[in-house]
Each structure stands twice: as structure tokens, then as C-alpha cells.
Length: 200
Image (cartoon, rainbow, N blue to C red; front, top):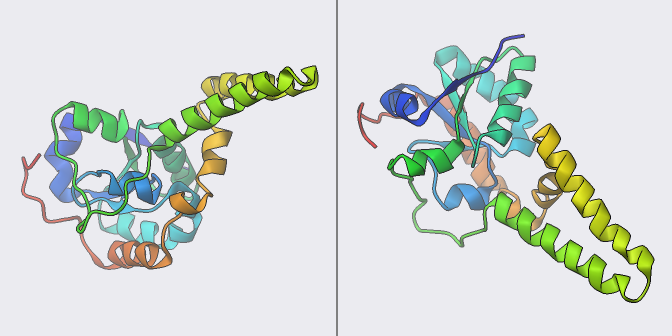
């Protein structure tokens, strides 16, 4: 089993022209802005993409990105368990954008979907409020709020998020079959994107 490693935004930027970049966020998040040349392979589709990722890894280095680094860390660990060495982008696309580097958008632009972190905050907040409001009818409903609070604490301790995993299965977060097939085909056939060194 190989050990995943990390690249910060500056390191990734200088190597962008030679890396195969996998964005493991949901399609909506990817459409809202991604690293130049990145291919969208959502985290829950990683097992399907393993043969193509292995093939790409034989040709060159792979950088895995997400919004903040948590999902790409999990993806790198999974890939390492299958003998595929990859790097993760420290801080994800958030750190990339904060460093002043450009994010690319599909053309024509598609409907923007909220980032997963924002979806989780909305869902958690709504469930807590519902639990408190229903608790006025019967105290047992307050357990909803307690369960959400416990889930958020566990999420922070383990750096995972069960709610995000559930939300990722909703239709607006799922890849269109054609989009995923196109990403897998591109992964099979192309070398790292031809991006001149130093392009932001």
C-alpha cells in the first residue's frame, strides 16, 4: 500500500501542466468552478473509475482535489489501498482560489448547485430547528436536534460527514451518465492537460 502525499496551491500550480487532476466533488460543485484541466470523478463513483485511474497513474502523477481537502484525503486513501499513488491539494479548491488562481467553468454554464458544506449547514440547521419546534408538541422530538448535534461532533472528530454522503446521493448532486462516461473516457485516453507552466 502506498502513502498519499500533499501539494499546496503554489506547488500544484507549477506542476499543473504535468498532472492528471481528479476533482472528487459533486457535479454541481465542479460546475461552480474547478482547477484547469480537472476531470470530475465524484467520490462515490471512485470504485467504478479505479481501472481508468490506475491507467492514468501509469502515465504520470495524479492530483486529487475537492472543496477543502477532506474528501480528496479519503479518495487518496482509497486509491492507496488499491496501490495507486496520488497527491491531494492542501485546502482544496478553496485554498486554490484564495491564493488568487483561476477556477475554470464549463461552457455553456450549467445551473449552479450549492457546495456540499453549504448543503450540510442548511440541512443540519433545518433539522435542529424542526426538532426544537416539534419539541414543543412532544419532548421526544428534541432527540432530532440532539442527534444532529452528536452527528456534527462525530463529523468533526473523524473528519468525515455522513450527512454529506447522504446528500451526495440526491439527484441534483449526481453526475449525468454521459458526463461521467466522458470523464472516464478522457481519463483513459489523454495525457495530463497541455497547460503551459505558470498559467494560473
